[in-house]
Image (tube, rainbow, N blue to C red; front, side, top):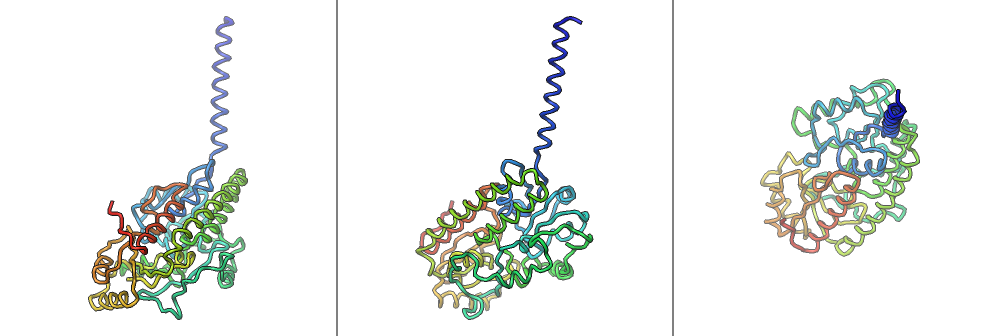
Length: 370
């Protein structure tokens, strides 16, 4: 063999070895397979996983987590997940049955059970009873004004927020009969139970969610635990900055009253001390009759309601009718992320856009038609 051929052979071998090492390094650095139910929570997970991997999003922005139907490919992907993140069966009941089919070692993070998350009770449709249901005082400065009841609920969850399936039945959920009954009637989608599951719309809850996700990511991928912790700290600082900007934009209109199409914004009201007076319907699938519609219009007029909040996922027809009868303006607020591009910045973009839309409506600024 000539010296030239010999050197060429060495060069080829070295190149192959280098490519092999590069491939092995890429495999070693690949993050865990994480699946997240819908956009705002996916955004927080993506921020924490920055530089490690990208979580998979189940519910596209154009859809609602209420009553979403999984594709077979998505159900198959769940079988391979290292971690599945959702709010809980109170919101994403469509995940109950797929989760029940997973192996005993599947790791499910139900954020309704996360440590530090404040729960608010589900409210009735109509104008809220001031003595019982409606409290728009701002939270105490420490961020969470009452956790005793929540701490009691967490008994039995040793780690405070997540659980691997130990007996194969842990996520079957005893409320399955209620979901099945709701499916038969066609109106199960908004039967949230005694607690409101829209927890992410409170920035303090979002910070608790970030900590919970970072903890679970570190548990399934300890090699990147430091990166998850650093990203979580940066995400929380970003949420703090966002909260301060929202406080500034909403400050001048806090005392002006509004109603919502359905009661998805209680946590947002509570976080920023807003004057939400009620919701038009408890379920978007069930429109009130003519008599109830007149009662709502009369109530809104007597309480000088300035604004009706609608959601992009649902028809605005009912809200438009009441706006015409009462002179209230309409603002589109989005709890689930239909108006933002999925990714690490989606949560902040969603919250800021909602705050600006509400501030414009309550201040009498005409809605942007574009």
